[in-house]
Amino acid sequence: MKLALAHYDSLRRRYRNHRVLVISFLLVITTAVADDSSGGRWDLLQRSIGVSAMHMQLVHTDHVIIFDRTDFGQSNLSLPAGKCRDDPADLALTIDCTAHSVEYSVTGNSFRPLTILTDSWCSSGIVAPDGSLIQTGGFNDGERAVRTFRPCGGESDCDWSENSKGLAVRRWYATNQILPDGRAIIVGGRREFNYEFYPKSNPSDLTTFPLAFLKKTRDLEENNLYPFVHLNIDGNLFIFANNRSILLDYNKNLIVREYPAMPGGEPRNYPSSGSSVLLPLKPSPTEAEVLVCGGAPIGSYTQAKVKNSFLEALSTCGRLKITDESPTWAMETMPVPRVMGDMILLPTGGDVLIINGAAAGTAGWEFGKNPVFTPVVYRPDGPIGERFKLETGTTIPRLYHSSAVLLRDGRVLVGGSNPHIYYNFSNVEFPTELSLEAFSPEYLSAANSASRPAITPSAAGTTELNYGKQFTLQFNVETLADSVSVTMTAPAFSTHSFSMNQRLLILETGKAAAVAGGGYEISAVAPASTVLAPSGYYTVFIVNGGIPSEGIWVHIQ
Image (cartoon, rainbow, N blue to C red; front, side):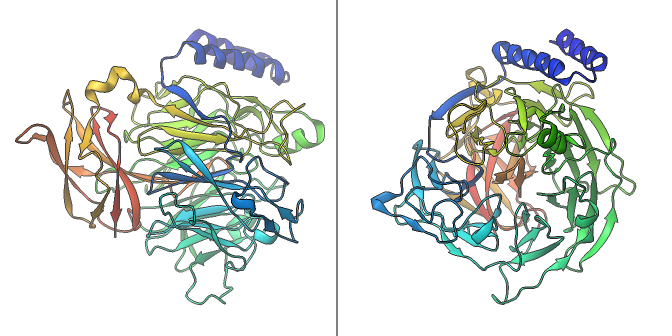
């Protein structure tokens, strides 16, 4: 494998102007790795849910809310009981009797249609402290909409509610982040160089707050949409757009820091579409670090649109300690280039999964080529030069408008991919994809079963936590490791290569000890404040020597 990658690098240097040849060689490498790697397993869960998964959000009932857009015509799933959506503003069908959203049951591997009334194309969302999915913006009649889904365990009368004028301005390709006070901040969007908050103290309040940084980072191809937003440990917001970043005090509308530009000068946001995570936060954290990976070179969108030429995607990642006094980017190189990839924080507390995407082109209709079938695991604390590990590959291309979310059982749910204006299943290179798959990382393999802890009781329901207070978990495991930790993850809103609100905390713990009657227990301390963990639902895992348990839902307030 190392020889193959070395040969790929040699070819890339030699044939800089012959990208199709080099990328084709890359895909041979990727396929070979997918065939012989032992890293993880893929399972096809549903051949079709009728809707392409442009957006996904896991909620605390172990259901995933999935939705697409409404303005492309009929989906492949009918609304129940002859129900139809009557929308004179719809650009494709004013009367549409098909669903554009589904509720997927993880435990039952089943789904049911939901009704979205306004166009949710390229929108954003958070999970509120009470567990409701608050979903904002979109296109056309949905550009100012706020949609709410209150989880109810799959009951048939549970559906979306909507306020078509809930936002101050149009929010299309914007980013949401939950704040320590439980509100959402909605940042940017196409030609919106500002931010606003939701919910509003006064529903008629149309106040927005200017953010010139978004105008400065907009180039001829935009490349600053869906900005990467992370809540820093000091309560301010880290915002990355194009190749630059700031720290924003949103309460004062004040930029408190400007960070160095990412080396290389290449864009990383939509449509160049790299991805980003806030790396796992250690107990009582004093530092925070952001990782940005992949994307497309300057001019990729124009080359694809005007010349039908598809430039090789970016293969670099950058890390920045955003709490340092004088931070600098540390650059690394992935095994394969990737644009439109998704990055998932795995519950081990030390692994980042990079999945989905393409090796050439950019986001946009028909603009992605050469799917990257092989996920990569990145280990932030590993030795430099040995941090990336190629995993088992899928056989289903996941390009533009695909998504991925971490499930409570440790699997990663993957869906979507529709690089066409409408649903298109024939006479195209990459048909619209309606399937759902699950990727099971290597920690779920049978070889690790003796080390896999099981939190007891298995049907623990939701545990209430209090900030800064100790709680105890009991668990069973066949082989207790020397190192046992507890991690806590926030379920993320996944769309367009970015998982909004994604967060993983490694909790302060005591030493695992045997208990009378069998099994073990471990004490952990909940995060100290809403700055570290905004109020809401999280999943908590016990990690035994790097092998996580199935998670349990907790609620902290």
